[in-house]
Amino acid sequence: MERISETDLILNEDGSLYHLNLFPDDISDLVILVGDPDRVARVSRFFDIIEVKKGKREFITHTGRIGKQRITVISTGIGTDNIDIVLNELDALVNIDLDTRLARSNFQSIDIIRIGTSGALQPDIPVDSLLISSAAFGLDTLMYFYEQTLTLAEEELLQQFCSIIPDGYQLNPYLASAGDKLIKQFGTMAPQGLTITAPGFYSPQGRQVRAKSSVPQLLLIVSDFQSSRGKITNLEMETAGIYGLASALGHNALSFNVILANRSTNKFSKNPGAIMDDCIQSILTKITETYG
Ligand SMILES: O=P(O)(O)O[C@H]1O[C@H](CO)[C@@H](O)[C@H]1O
Ligand SMILES: O=c1cc[nH]c(=O)[nH]1
Image 1 (cartoon, rainbow, N blue to C red):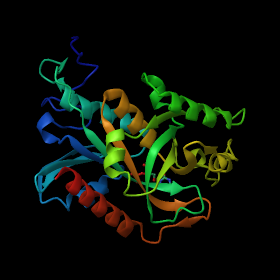
Image 2: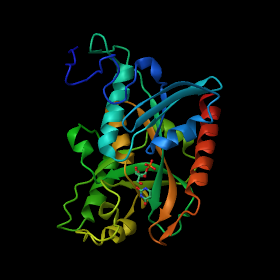
Image 3: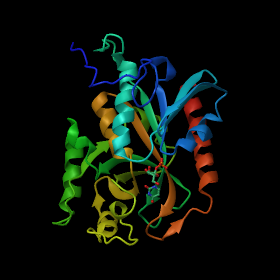
């Protein structure tokens, strides 16, 4: 086993992880990821007890319990570049001895559940509904930097998707899937769909404000895509990175998308806060039924 150097895995002066500012005891093996730092407290207010409240930059962490189940909720901020930080540091907290800087011999897998917002692509997906990403195409570049193993079916799906991207679009998508275990446990809670993880909110999600888009047909092309695993249902900014890195590290991940916008009908939720709160509550209820 090789010792991990001081610049490969950086610790703060107190020995906590560089960005998350956490120690191994601060987290559960069941982790909820949210984008918005303010959403952390909106999740943890349903905990019976909060044991840990820490943070640094956009990475706010609360750990507590519902009944006997210990749960950690962490904000990632926006984008897969932050997912790189959060997933690697979470994994380090459970699978690296921070004193010896050696990987622990007893690998521990964690369950990672994203509760995020998203825009639907298909006209029949209602605003304010919940959707599970069965898999996600990453239009960002995060997983170019990690070894990925795809099943034959995943390779075929990725090929199908790549074949509809017009020449000149300079997109090189990757694909990553939800963890089988969590799909089995939570998969009936909401419709499942294929997600696009975009490296931005505006032109990378087909929005036209003032800057001219170089991919003006993006929304049309991805909404028309029909695959053996159905249509592409929604756009957001983290899921493919979470699925890709969770799988590379041996963890299970599942992404819930609270649909706030419908890009086909141009409708936006009239009550995004209340809808998110309802979704958080039903996911926490299912978590307690499943793990409790
Ligand atoms: O609501 P969150 O979890 O941040 O998720 C979505 O909202 C943000 C964009 O507004 C992106 O992070 C996107 O993935
Ligand atoms: O359209 C949307 C809505 C929420 N989050 C996104 O990334 N896109």
